[in-house]
Length: 97
Ligand code: HEC
Image (cartoon, rainbow, N blue to C red; front, top):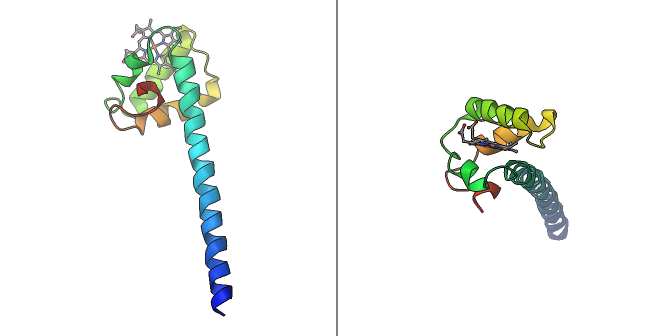
């Protein structure tokens, strides 16, 4: 009985761990993409300065404008990139590393 419960708990932990890892991989993936695409013309510091200032809509407008200028970001990643940037606390994220 006790053993069964332990096994169940362990399986639960493993599942939670896998989901946590998958979530983190997704976030760092878009973080790296943003850093790469957004540090070609200006320093990522320029982006970092605005982290925590712009909201999601403002980031979407900025990212779309940068893509128009030639940022190497696929159109279907604009939303993910904007959401990533909008969700960062000031001074954090790959662009501030
Ligand atoms: C093709 C060159 C180029 C690339 C790539 C680029 N930018 Fe820019 N960025 C500029 C130029 C030029 C300016 C200054 C003129 C302006 O603001 O439009 C600028 C200014 C900015 C500013 C300050 C002005 C503002 O609106 O707050 C931010 C923030 C910014 N870029 C974010 C980004 C992000 C995020 C990316 C990646 C998606 C990116 N940039 C990629 C050329 C680029």
